[in-house]
Amino acid sequence: AVIQHTGDILYVPTTMQFSVCFLDITKFPYDIHQCSLVYRSWTYDHTKLILTFKENISAMDMTSYINSNEWKVVALPAENSITEDGFSLLTYTMIIQRKGGLYGYILILPCLLLSAATMVVFWIPPESPAKMILTVSIFSGLFLLLLLLAESVPGKKKID
Image 1 (spheres, rainbow, N blue to C red):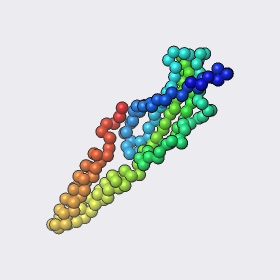
Image 2: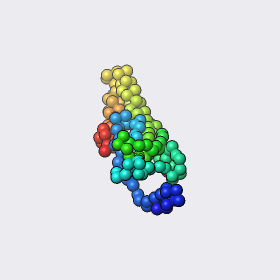
Image 3: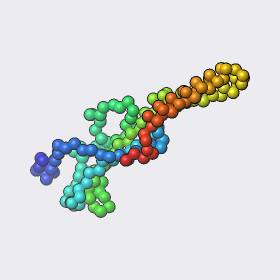
Image 4: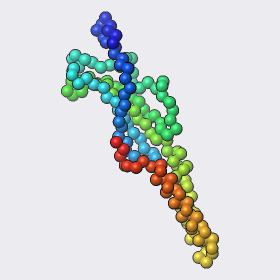
């Protein structure tokens, strides 16, 4: 810790911190999630300890961020406040959105094309062997698409 002549203390712990974020995937693959990291003192109220950012910031630092193919960072607000019970509080919030474009090409577009092909089956005469061949092909395509969908969609509605 570094103690200034003004009484300010700069404490930089060398720790790795992990956080759990509850994900609501009801709008998969177009879901948006908000995760927060909250730092507060459990022993000293704001008259004895005020938590502040090193610099006056309003968002998280993105210099070490590595771009993701699946997620887009929407916002990274950071704020300090005083709780109702009088404790100093620092809050970092991360709002991320899943990039649903890939899922649109892999899952939604083939499903629409197979549904359109299903309508074509009704225009083919019943005695034509092409009707049965097309129907079995569409069924096989929908079955494979369902297998792909089962692998890519998370298992529960809410992930904790």
